Image 1: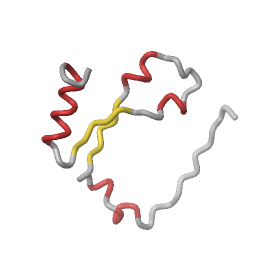
Image 2: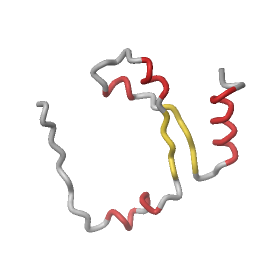
Image 3: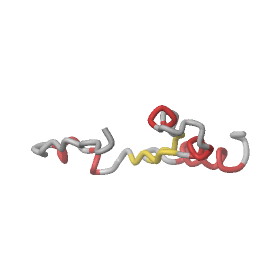
Length: 72
């Protein structure tokens, strides 16, 4: 219920913070092998929209990293 408890707190936080937003991880189940785990519905993102990490200048001249999966 978004009118009390944690969900109300998240809504109030999002309304009062212009550059910080909290949202539910809606696609996490699609990425997991065990899709019915209870904790998957309890995961949230914090978006820090004014972080210097998000500035495109910080991404210039960076060498790409290729990730491998040892389980394949």
